Image (cartoon, rainbow, N blue to C red):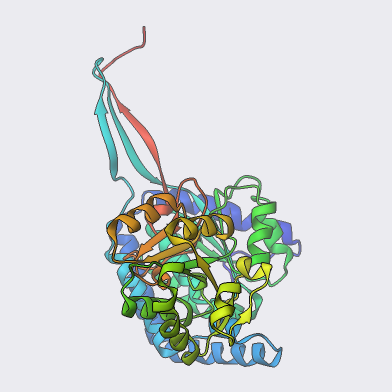
Length: 426
C-alpha cells in the first residue's frame, strides 16, 4: 500500500504523489553518496532474500498474460527468472559502485575581474518513468534516479503490477532503513489508465522530466501529450551494414547476434544492408546462419534474384520494428549507399558497420547521426549495462541533453556557481 492515503479522486491522488516527490527531492539533493549507495545495496539484499516470493507472484502474472493471448515477445519482457533476478541485484551493486555525479565540477574558469565560475552537476529533480511489461524497470529506473539525487514516480504496466509492488517494497524498506524519505521513490499503484494522463500533465509543474519505456503507442502518446521534457525513443529501426571489406566470420556472427540474440529488444537489428561488391562472397554464409537460427529473411529485388527462398520485401518493411525473428535485407552500393538508406529509414537508435577498412568505418561513423554507432560489434550492445552504466532507464534518440543509454549521469543537469570577493558590475 502506498504511504499516501488514496483519495477517491485520481487527480488528488496523483497530485499528492507529486507533492511528496517534490518534498523528497529536496532531501535527496543533499543525500550523501554513502546513504544512496547503502539504499541500493540493501535493496539488492532484500530482493535476494525475497526472491522466491517475487518469482511466485511473477509466475502468476505471466500465466495470466499467456491466458489473455499476449505475444511471446510481450511475455518474455514481463517474465522474471532466477537469472533475471540475479541480474537486477547485480545492476544495483554496479550502480552503487559508480562515481556519484552530484556535486562534480564539470568545468571551472576565472574571469579578469577575479570571479571564479564553476559548472556543477546537480539532480534534475522529479522524474516520472512510465513503462510497460518489464517489472525490472521498477528497480533499474528507481536506482538510477536515486543515485543521481532525484525523486522518482514510477508507473508500470497493469499486467505486472503485483510483481512491481513486490520489487518496489524492497526499495521502500531500504530507503526507510537509511533515513531517507520513503517517498523519494513512489509507485503508482492504481491500474487506472487515466493515471498516465495525470503524469503527462506534469502534476502542476511538479514533474521535471518524463521517461517512457514501452511500445510505440505508449511512447508516441507521451511525446504527444507530455507537458514536461521527455527522454525517449519511439522505435528501434536498427541496421547492420556489411561492407565489401568485412571479415566474413565477423559478418556472420554480428548479423546473427544483432537479430537473433533477443529479437524483442529495441537494439535488435531490423534491417541488414550488404555491399553489392561483397554480395557473392558473403550472402550464402550469412543467410544460412540466420535461417539456421530461425530467422525469416525479406529481401529486395537483388536478394530475390540470387535467393529464391527470400520473401519479397515490401515498402513498409524498411520502417517496421519487427521485434520478432524477421529481418529485411537490402543490397546497397558501398558505404555511401548504406548511409543513404540509413538516413532515409533509421529511427536514430543504433547502427553497425562491419568492415576491416578503417577509412570506410570512419566515414560511416562520421556521417551516421544515430544515438549509437558501432564498428565491428553487434547492435545488441545498445544497452546501459553493456556500456558500464550498471543499468539504463531507456535509450534516448533525441538531439538534446542525452543520447543513447540513459544512466545516472544522464539524469543530472548542472548549475553555474560563481565565487566572488565583493565584485560589483560597473
